[in-house]
Length: 415
Image (cartoon, rainbow, N blue to C red; front, side, top):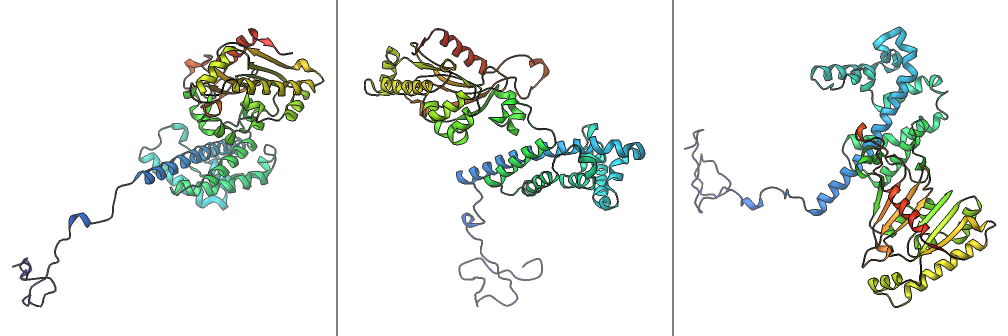
């Protein structure tokens, strides 16, 4: 007998829930299902985890850019509008600057600030102000409302507004944890860099014209010394960092390796002539094709006898033809060395703070095209983790530059 006064049917085979044999006044109970068939499959397979991690990585990169832009715009708004409104309105200068048109959203920011105060969310006293609680669209609204105040500092209002329009798409996606496509992420990074430059906060690293400073590098640059990119092989390097971007516009180019294929085979002789005529000083250091080191390298790679030496000779002849077309051949030097080759390095503007280097180690069973590639940025690191490390040169760039200079002194010129 059930608790409601109704008789429960027996659970044997002869009394199914819909059986006509069930006595009147009883309640039929469905039989339990097999436990293995209850509910959906909750486990994620490898593809699902890979997709989630990809989404998180893209959203993280986008968030870094959005955060930089928002903080920069907040600083610009404060620098321009605070001197105008604060003398009269004091701490409520943001509310006054918003005016009647912005009363709704500025009061919402005030309310959020009060809630954050009560719940102890304000960990930094510097954030205990209304401006810190304005969103990117609200900061934009303040800027647009007071454009005559910002006009002396910003060249083109249209460029700023277009960049903010592009970022609003990304901001909407990231704030709601939606999927962010690679195309939208790239667009957001370009728009952010353009906007930061327009607001006077462009990268202060001189080499950014050749190798743009990435937002992630800004944050964790001190973790990896001056290594700003790592590629599994030269193909992937050139896909992300074409030869024109590496060598184009260089004022100085020093290269050491076996055959210097990255330069010789991917940067045309005509382009090299124009580069040298524009004032670029070039020093190329090849492995001597007649040395025993070439023969050892051929054996390591399983190449036919003389195959590598002929390839190096062809590259040297090609560079000699380039040199012969110059008005000042002395600015285009070619030398060979006889030591065991340990790495290839292409140092672009390596004598200044805006230098970039592409470095590969020689592996016993891998050709240069297949070896991992490091991209280095010269100068001090972008970010210091603490002040104690300032002035300490912990980068790799000077090491390879010194190796080049040492090898150059011990090498012989090619006539």
